[in-house]
Length: 262
Figure 1 (tube, rainbow, N blue to C red):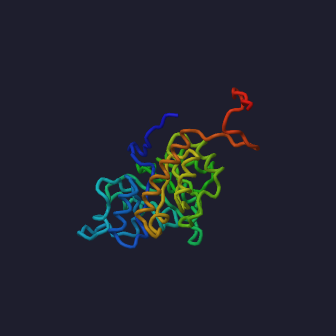
Figure 2 (spheres, rainbow, N blue to C red):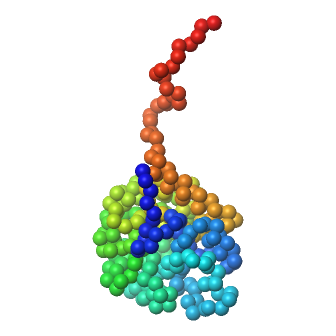
């Protein structure tokens, strides 16, 4: 199977790993980890950073050169709040890209599907390129793509939980139903094997933050995640062997020379 580059909102990305910028112990450590990840798109929670700070020690000065900034509406619990935040991000950062998050409650951080659909429809009509964080409901994902989302981003597990892909079957259904825009697994990845497992399902990419930022060695973990995403993609393209009920000999039984008697 021939691979194609990941294209989001008309922009070709070299890496299928998208990383967040929160929770790092220091800004220099954040920059080093982002560089090690190889990601060329990073998310920024616009409600949690100073958009006007352009000082030498500001958050913005610690982003790697040339990365695409994907502002997000993290922390918004209503469609109206998310839309206002998206408009603020577009004005301050001069980009139509937005990662849309409309959360349902503070304990699970599960997406409010009704609010998400409402906000997505408004933002698409206003010309935003909307990458939408959503549940793993395949029909909701398909509806978001029909509304004009630039990417659909189902969760693997609750945000920051590190539990990996808890329900792989819905993710595969989403990949089958949503073919017009990229499908990016977002939230819940905890380690490199989780990232590889997500990519093996055939999704177009993985977004993560906590798995790298809260690792004991974020820079090394970022490198591991880079390799895991690449390996998982290669596995999907290669096509894994079939699962069998019983053993199958590694050496073929036919065409074997008869044993030589002493």
